[in-house]
Picture (tube, rainbow, N blue to C red):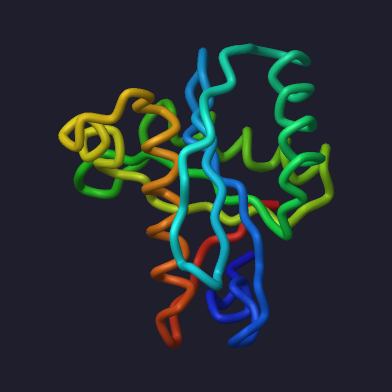
Length: 150
């Protein structure tokens, strides 16, 4: 169900905290950010699968206490979905189901390329930060709609 970005970010002056994820089948990059600064910082990479992955994410949620989550959803350059698209969307649905937080999906085309070009030491976490900064920019723009995974 689409959610207006303004509603996703909250009213002016009200800080909203987010954790963002760059989903991968082996690793998940993580970043945090908020609406006051409109910036994101890479936190690290969860290098686990299955229950261990969600246990690590649960620990991050307890530590950072976000108001919502953001997941990057990859697509081909022309915008069409590919095999990882549905996996990332499934991950977003799992986050929502397990942690009962709103989950926003963001088109994450080229974030890995951008993180590598910037010389990031942890490409997955840097990509998650780029995903979150894109979400925060879009959420600050008037009349923008972002996809909300459920």
